[in-house]
Image (cartoon, rainbow, N blue to C red; front, side, top):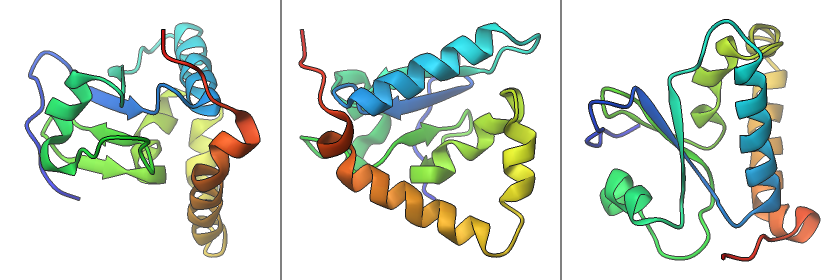
Length: 132
């Protein structure tokens, strides 16, 4: 995990693929779950296809479709892929259970493999949202 400058007013930023139907639906679901809890997660969502995402990611940014999601933490630490979502889980309903399951020796590698397979095939399986 590398360090990147984070903007001080935002505790963390989740950079997601704004053209992937699965990613946009997951973002909306996380926001909906977050609204239904007493504790608001300190996350702001930024689409990968934005200048803001390019600024946050710096040299990590590549034009085109991203291979994974990114989480830029308040201290500038950059998390990629499934690791971008793990810090968000405690604030979501059922998230603590999912984190506990990740401690089971065989489940964690399977979760990472599942993330990679879904990320690689997300456009084929779930479709694309055309930019406006």
